[in-house]
Image (cartoon, rainbow, N blue to C red; front, side, top):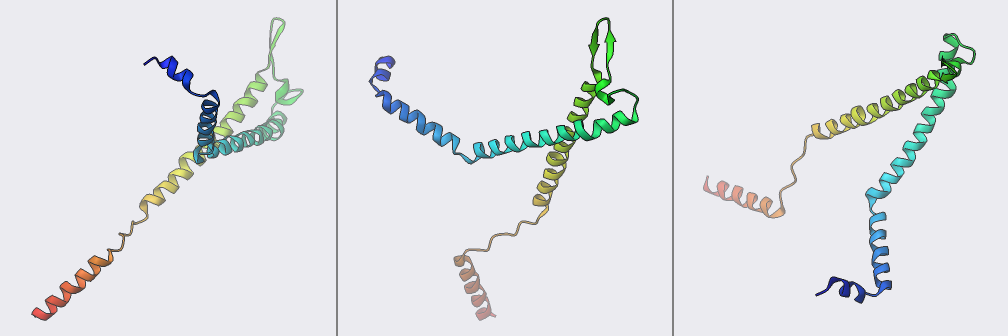
Length: 146
C-alpha cells in the first residue's frame, strides 16, 4: 500500500484536530506546567540577583577600590580601544551568586529533604483482614491444644 495515498485519504480537518489534541495532551501534563513555572520563577530570581549585584554589591566594591565611576569606570585602554573589565567582574559576581544560590537549593536543601525521606523508617503495611483472622484462628487452636 502506498503511504502517500493513505496519507492523502485522511481528512485534513481530522489531522489538524488530531495534532491539536496531541498538543493539548502534551501541554497540559503536570511536568510541562511545572517546568514553565520553574522557568518563570528562575527568570525573576535572576533579575533580583542581577539588581542586587549591579545596584548594591558592585557599588560598594567601587567605594572600596579606587575609580571615578566605581566598577563601571574600570577599563583597560589598548590603543584606541577600551576593554571594560569592570562590567565583566560585575557579571562574574552575578554568576557566582546565582550559582551559589542554586547549589544551596539543589544540592544542600533537596539533598537534605531526600535524606530525611530515606531515613524515615518505613512502617510495614497492616496485614490484610484475612491474615489477621487466620492468625487469630491459629492462636485459638494452639490454646485448645495446650
